[in-house]
Structures are given as C-alpha cells and as structure tokens.
Length: 214
Image 1: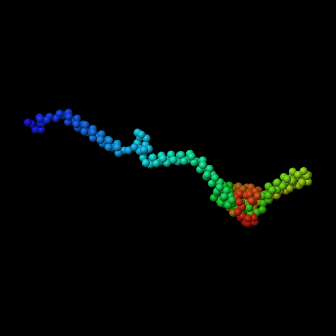
Image 2: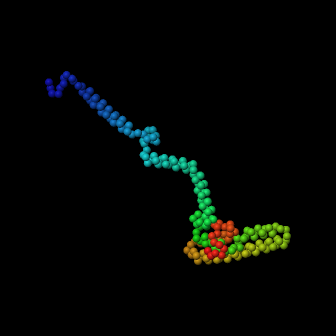
Image 3: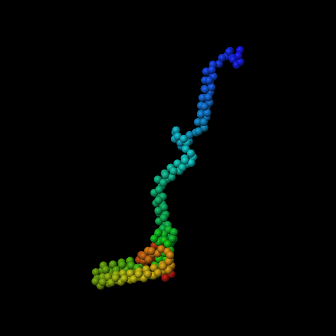
C-alpha cells in the first residue's frame, strides 16, 4: 500500500475544489454583510445616495433657514429699520446730534453756518408773516391801502436782499478764517436758506441764543 493512499475512503478531486470555492464565496459575502450593516444611512440623505458630510448638511440647513426667514420677514425688517432711522434723525434734528443728522446738515462748517445765522437778527425770517399782511392789505378795495401794500412789499424785498448780501459776505469771511482747509462750498447758500425760516421752525433746532457769538 503506497504512502498517503486511502483506498477505503476515496475523496473525489472535484469535491475538494468545489468546497474551497464555496467557502471563499461565503466568507466574502459575510464580510460584505458586516460592512454594509455598519454604514447606516443618514436620515437626510436621499435613497441610493451617500450620506452628506456634517459640515455640508449644516450649511444646507442654515441656508434653507436663512432663505425662509428672509422671504417672510425682509419687508417687515426694512420697515422697522427705516422707522428707527427716521426716529433717530428726528431726535437728532431736535438735539443737534451730529451722528444722525442728514448729510446736508453734517460737519463743522454747516454747524458754524447754522450758529452764525441763529445768533443774529435776520429780516428774512419775518418774510412769511409780512407777506401775509401785505396780501391782506392788497385784497382790501381801498386804493390807499393797496398802494401802501405795494410800497411795503418793495421795501421788504429790498431789505431782505440787502440783509442777505451782508450776512453772506460776513459768513464767507468767518468761514475762511475758521475753516481754511475744509470744504466750504454751499455753506453760505445753506445759511441764507435757513435765514428765510422763522427761528422756531428751523431744523436742526438752534443751539445758540441771539447775540451769542458762535
């Protein structure tokens, strides 16, 4: 009897190779099953697609939330911001706070121009009351009163023009002395327009008294 032979229980070669192949396939299938079971699908990931990274998922949620909030509250927020800005500007016009004044009223040059006009007596600030009086006199059917109203009208116009020329000349000189390096363009016209308004109606509110040096 030869070495390694087993005549009593012969084993076919085909059975040996088939068994090894089946065992290898089973081992691979088990590994795949274990691997798949460990990778759970993220609840936000669509079926058949890989799970998104945490940073990507967070950015997507934040983007959706911001978009929804902007669409619903953008108009309301703009109205509230506009209302708050107008309220700050109204308070600044009353108190003279430079931070919230309109652009045309900001700056030391414009502030000095306002103080210069508010510190002196201006004939132009009484233009509206005098215009009403002249209009009433001209409507009365009395020739003498109508002639007086016309003469008074001419006198008022001449006085306002002369006073405005003097005010503009003095203010221009003071601005050149006080602010030689600052931009002064439009400051004189700004002051003359302010002088046409009655003192109590001026905005921003006067910050100096009459006769007080600005």
